[in-house]
Structures are given as structure tokens and as C-alpha cells.
Image 1 (cartoon, one colour):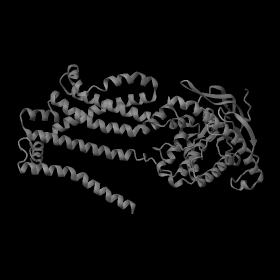
Image 2 (cartoon, rainbow over the protein chains, first blue to last red):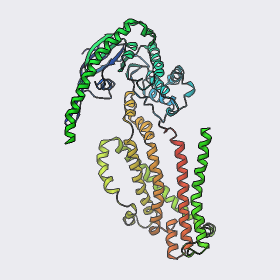
Image 3 (cartoon, chains in turn brown, red):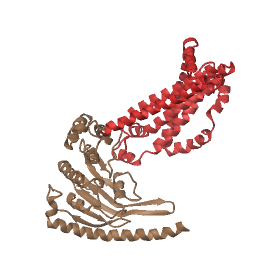
Amino acid sequence: MTPQTDHCLLTENLGKRFENGQKSVQAFTDINLSIRRGEFVCLVGPSGCGKTTLLRCMAGIETPTTGRVEIVADPKPNTSRLAMVFQQHWLYPWMTVEENLRFVLQASPIDAVLHADIIDRFINRVGLGLFRKFYPYQLSGGMNQRLSLIRAFCIHPQMLLMDEPFVFLDYQNRMMLQKLLLELWADEKQTIVFVTHNINEAIALGDRVLLMTASPGTIKREMVSEFPRPRDVVDLRRDPHYEEMVVDITNDLREEIEIAQRKMESEWLKSKPKKRA
Amino acid sequence: MAEVKAEKEGIGVTLLFIASPLLLLALWEIGVRAEWLDHRFFPAPTTIVAEIVRLFAEDNLLIDILASLRRIGLGLLAGFPTGLAIGVAMGRWKWARAFFAPLVAFTYPIPKIAILPLLLIIFGLGETSNVMVVVIGVFFLALINTYAGVRQIDHEYFDVARVYGISRWQVLRRIVLPAAFPDIFTGLKLAVGYGLILIVAAEMVAAESGLGYRIWTSWETYVIKELYACLMMISIIGVVLAVILEKIEGRLVHWKHTG
């Protein structure tokens, strides 16, 4: 695999198998992706198809069993290679709002003289200016997730991985954060891989939507979401083409969900009698 | 409104907190004065308090208290950080766990005071032996509580650290230690209480000063008032230390409001 300069993330025959005693589970298999610099790619798939594990392999938190991941970072000054946002905010509860940001900045390649400015700018941008000395337990769930979002953006990552970051938020906060994400991304056009099971979200946010099959997950289909930017995640719903796309992908996803369901049931039937005996 | 109510309840609880020991002391006092209790074996609380005052004023009780506190302090200073360090290592690294776990499992069940004779053989009759009993007792409490605290840290905190390239040293200092801090502090509170228990026991046989030494000599000379006075002092010291630690804890782990 020769790295092409216009690609930020490449995977080659990527696969992950979990071994646990006699039981082994293939999380995903044969993932070949090439994601362009500045591209916003959404990954959707049924629960348990390995999309989170795939993302964790990309992040280097998990080691793939087969294949490889390559993140081609541009040697630009004052940028970082990678950041990730998780389902829950996972801020450090013993650090204040600004300490949480400073902590990741200090570990990043970003010049120390810029840290204070960066912290100010991001905190004010997401409306946490009055809360900079607050601890996560003193903030609401939406505020914490906003902070976890800017924790990722503040180190100016070239590659941003997001694992269903809005899944635990209420409707109002989710809309607000989707909007915020698109705005932050518009500034620097980081390369983003965004995992979600919400098809509306995937189409509204992404340039490209990748649909994964039931476990072991692999890429089933890919669609381009060509709606003009800047996008408004709510206005977009008026577009008939958008609705069509949602229905189209939902039908495909439903198929995979049913396969996943059947597989789970048969496994349950296989394991249950043993336990009874 | 809700806050006012909570505060009221708080005062009620505080009053009860003070009332229960006072009630017991009052019953005791009445019991002795009415001669239901033999005052030779159960001197009245007022007699004991008077004896404490006398001991402070005429008999250098403060010197013995300070001797005991000094031994506890030295024991904590040497034993706690050592236990903490090994606890962190066991919590973080498989090899450390494999190496230390059996050693801890075999040595932990030995009552620490039972090691005193051995310590007397090794270190001789003197300060070192007394302090070492505390060191050993405190060491295990630090180790076990730190280890438990470190093992309980959500792995996601380490995932975040990994993604953001946090160095191993920073992970230890800014993540592992603060995350385990509430458990470490619980260990410290237990260690202070246990240190008091151990030093009094050790001083009974192996010291020429300290509260334990006083208790033992007052038993040998049959001065029961003094024996009670020392017991009451130990109890007061224990409570004061616990309250101080409780206050410090509230300051330091305020962030731990989950929910």
C-alpha cells in the first residue's frame, strides 16, 4: 500500500477477532477503506456489527488481528495526528473544564505559548466561558459532551474519530451538538470518521455513508451524501432526495438488523440448554 | 427551601451525634453516684476527667501522648508511601501483581502485633521496634486500599489517555493517583486508627513511654483512675484524628459527586 498524499486514513484487509477461552468472535473482517483528507465519513450498521471496535482499531486503542491501519498525517505545525470523542464524555472528573483541555494540549505537539489562547477560544465558542473553573459534576450532560467535543478539536487533530458521541443526549442537545460539530469542522476540515446507528444523523453530517453488515461486520454499501454545505440538519429534511436516501439506507440496515437478530437468537438457543443441564 | 430543610435535619443529626455519648456518660455517672457500680472498678466520668486534668498538670501526660503520636506519625510516614507505591504497581502492572500478590496473601493474615517479639529480636528494645509495628500495619492498609482503588478505575480513562498521547508518567500522576485517591484516603483513615491501636499495644510491652506504657504501669500499680484516664484520652485522640481526616477528605475529593 503506497500512501497517497490526498488520503488521510487507509485500512487494508482489516479484521479483528476476540478470543475468550473456547469462544471466539469475529468482530469485523475485510475492511478496506480509503478516506480522503478533509472527508466526513459516517459509519452505520446494526448493533454489534463491530463498528465501535473498528473505530477503536483506527484509534490504536485496540490491535487488529489482521490487516493494517495507516493514518497519513500531514507534517503541518501545531496540529495533532488524532483525536477521539466517545459515547460518554469521559472527562477527568478531578479536573476543571480548562484543566481537562490543558491536559490534552500539554501532551499534544501544539506549541505551549498557544495553549491559553486555544483554551479561551474554544471554551467561549461553546458557551462554557463562565464555567471554566467548574468540575464536570457541576455541569449538565450536554455541557460535558460539548467540552468533550472541544477537547478533541482543541488539539487540531488531522484525524477525528467519533464513536456515537451524541447517542446519550436528549433531542435538543443532540441537535445543538450536531450543529456545533458541523461548524467546528467547517473551520479546519479535519478528516472525520463518525460512527452512529442513526441514519438521519449519518446522512445529514457526512460526505459519505458506509453501511456495515451484521457481525462479522464488513462494508456492505457506500453512498455519497451530496447535499450542499453548509448544511442545516433540520432544513435538510425538506429535501425529498434526503428522505429517499434515509428510506433506502434504512431498508438495507433493516435487513442486516434481522440477520443480526436471527444470529443472536440461534446463539442463545445453542447456549441455553447447556446452562440448564 | 429544600436547603433550609436539609440544614435543619443536619442539625438534628448533629445533636443526636453529641447526645448519645453524653447520655451514656450521664448514666455512668448516676450509676456510680447511686452506688450501683463499684467506684473502685468503675470510677465516675467526672473523676476520670479530673484525673486527666491532674495527669496533664502534674504527671506529664502530654509527653506520653506526644510519644505515641510521634511513633504513629513516623510509622505512617514510612509505611504508607511504601504500601501506596506497591499498591499502584500491583494495580497497573501484571508482573507486579504476579510478584507481590502471593507475598501479600501470606503475610497479610498475620496479626501485626504478633510480629512484635520478632521485631524486638531484630531491632532490640527501643523506638525502632515500636515504630516498625506501625509501619507494617499501615503498609498493608495503604497497599490493599490503593490496589483496590487502582483496579476500579474505568478503562475508558486510559483509552482517552492513549488517544491523546498522554505519557506514562502523566497517566500515573494525573489519572491513576487522583482516580484512586478516594480509596487511598480511606486507607489513610483506617491506617491512622489502626496505628493508634497498634502503638498502644506495642507500648504496653516494648516502650518506656506512651499511652500504652501508661496503661500498663497503671495496671501494674493498680491505679484504676489513671487507666481509665488513658483509655479516655485514646478515644478522644482517635475521634479528633478521624474528624480532621474527614474534613480534609471533604476538601480534596469534592469532585466525586457521581450522578
